Image (tube, rainbow, N blue to C red; front, side, top):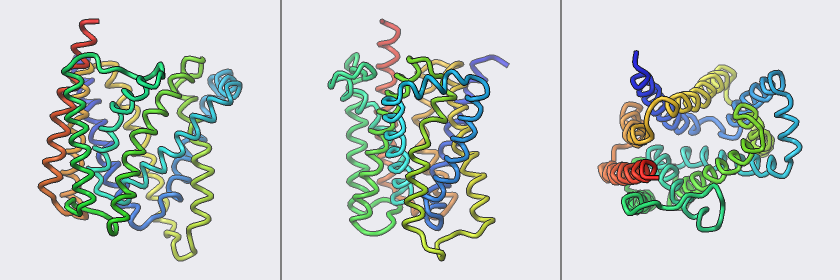
Length: 308
């Protein structure tokens, strides 16, 4: 089988798995405490990756702790990013939460560039600029749709909608900053496996404390429910990251960008199949606007790469 076809399969797998993740988490957190879930799932994930890194490359783990200041920045950013991510999919429509978070990332990368971060990225041509302007318009529209109670789901009133939108925006900003800090950690000699495991401990501790503080005995899920959530949650967190990594190595950036930009539509379709979120035509219009902007921006990015 040609490598390009294999890359397409991995890219599609990433989009499908991540879409299922958003929809599943959105439904799960209506009856399972998100902090308890994060403590269990990411605690196990962190322990596994740190253990594997210690067995295979212990020098990388030691090197990470030698860069303690950077490691703390990675942990703090990851902790807030996960709180924002899990909060957004719990409070507002998953398709909107995903799209706002994803759309904020290139804008944040540009702002980091303006503030002098070496990991930031400038707009390299007008096509990329116009595409991201359209993305920004789509984000604004989806925020207005949610705040005006025109979306398919908000868990509560206006205050909940504001908090959910704020979480989604924060997710995109914080995840972009997390990637920047992880790039610095990688440049210092710490491999991706070690970085992946070592970025969760602070969140695991924070989630455990919040779960203990906010839950009552009546809130505790049954053992089968919790075990199922842990197993499925773990299966929906790690494999998408692996699939994306495989896809990046096998297909062009433009192709990958086009496929991943369809994520909001896959989530929207899964929401319909799930039946928990009401269908909203204006939400679908906002997703289409985002898709248009993402494709235009990706075209400009690829053009700039080829010309450089």
